[in-house]
Length: 227
Image 1 (cartoon, rainbow, N blue to C red):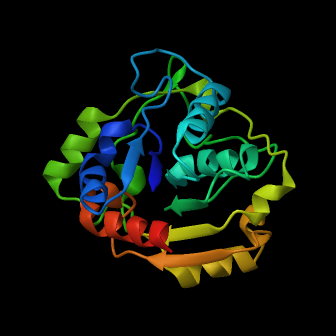
Image 2: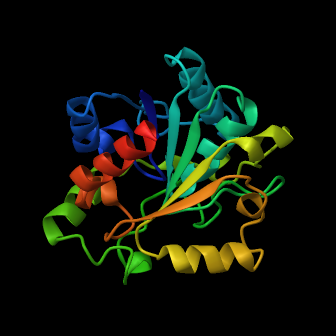
């Protein structure tokens, strides 16, 4: 199965290198994306341009692909399901939740000179980064790509109610499935409250399992694809 891999803020397609290698070994075709303005060499891009790149990958995929979004890019994966509900086999959301219609994509940090820089590790103290050793932290920080403010402050626009028919799997790294279910039940994630088919998978990692637990994450994604 084709598996489209979309990393969150500051990461490009190389973040999935080890996951992709394991997925290939397991018989799948991984498609790690490097998004416009986020690793492709361009200094600027918009959320609409990033979404267009994801939708194009869905359109070019063989059959019905699995679309995997990590962190902020969970919204991009969900937007792909919204734009192509008949094409996306399942949406897999790792360590994040889709934004509602009309909300900002990822307005978590203030931009500097039109871009959001990697803020260092202090904002991620605790479960997010507890499983990352110093070498991995330095590698992530060194490779971090500034994200254009037109992306982070871009407005999410959802338009097709058929997105709720697309099966959703929430992979829970720094939080548990029970916590995620509680947030959904409390109405904190309206898009997932309305999802018709929602399941959970736990992974014992921090916020970046593609880097700290790539083999385990790849096996989880392969199992989802084969389901």
